[in-house]
Image (tube, rainbow, N blue to C red):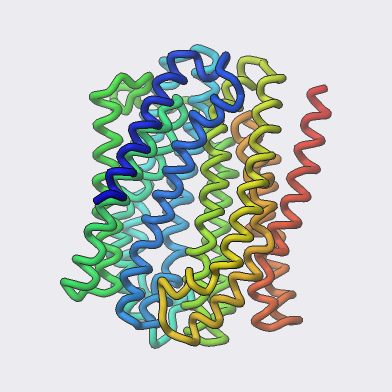
Length: 462
């Protein structure tokens, strides 16, 4: 109870900070540290909530002491990432476009963009549901399900497929709300979903004996309730935006703006899904325990990754607004300040998780084989964490400025044109060690590419 009261106090604190920031014109006049903190801290807390949200199911499934069910969650993760890709397409694309429109004082067009993103996400979610249910067997075979994990993965994926509209809409709406500077409301939506997920997971997984399928039910219900909260925000709160169907329009200008910005961001998630499928197929050759260990490690490493992503997404509206307002000095100061803090956060968490790695893995599995494998995997994966802050910042900066092409290059490099060849070569040369080393090597190389592309873009402007 004391922990929840402390959480409530922190939430109240951020509400006060956000109200203060908005009253003092956060986008134009507030000092850089306060402006970044006011938007980034709630967003980072929201991402941390998302990490808890993601870890909860794995934790309770781990209490079943069945490595095959943990592996099943790992196998189906690419499908969840695919849904996230579609939510990102309209959320990041629409959100970045909305920030630019608000910076230009074009409020009516911003409302139309928000309505398009909402109804577009629902439509895409329905299509995903139908495709998922119709081609379930093929999808699971492609994802790397073995004879030991197939039925568990199928039980999980059926529920996720049915809940696709809510999952896609939840990802999209959180980004749209954040685009108008309402980071605390976006955080609240994720917080509500996480709390519900935490409550429902033990009920469905353990008490009702549904196992991994229960984790999927809890996830879908949590997303449904988050969507209802976001709808309530648009309908009842003083939002500058709208999801009214009356505002829904399709114009060539809007489609070009949303998809030119959103496509690179969604391709990142899409390629992440593809690379995870390929990674699972390589990993399953070394046994289901390797797949389970990779699944646990990927969730542990989510803590610093999502915090860094939250920091960069939090400042994205600031960058987009000041870029559109032609306030390049303030935009550059925001980017430099964020880069310093992003690097510091990456270094701190790398050292912390390197020290506590085994204990963190034992939270999710007490299988000695999974724990021993996971500890070694984590030490390798952590090598690239200090570089991710810069990489994410450059990517979100390009998105905020409407620079779709360089953002696209970074997205397809990290999870596609660099990762997949490196994975294939590393597996051929180093076996399992090579498979585990592929992502850190790719991240470091992509960060170097990000710095080069950003430097070239800055030189063009000067």
